[in-house]
Amino acid sequence: MEQLNIDCGLEEYAVGGAILRFNPTDPNLYARFMQLEGQLGQLRKELEQKVSAAMEASQVLTVLEETDRTFKDLLTRVFGPQNDFSKLMEGVNLLAMGNNGLSVGENLLMALEPVLTKGAERFAGVKTREAVEKARQRRAGL
Image (cartoon, rainbow, N blue to C red; front, top):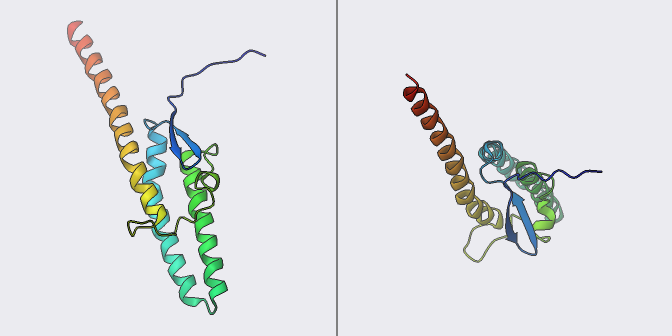
């Protein structure tokens, strides 16, 4: 069988003991990441409702576990199935607190946001340069 070698623009980032791989200039990835904000807002509301309704500590722990699993599943959908956030986070619940007082999930999103923003800017810059070059060629042909 022949092998096709395709440059997909993947970059690698060490997260814990695993590697997160994605193309930060992928506009679909950026769009999914932006949609994540609304999904996480809904997840937060559901978490608050379920915790308020819980009658026992074991129910709260179950809700926290379910919310963590859903959060990681959303991240896996954003970054692709090759990036299993359950494995990437090495069992750490994304709702756990970091030393800075923010949740592990918040710290993760804050670390990812500038990488994705720079990637989106690189993508837009390339497309802008291409459009300017095409316009220059059209003007030169007049």
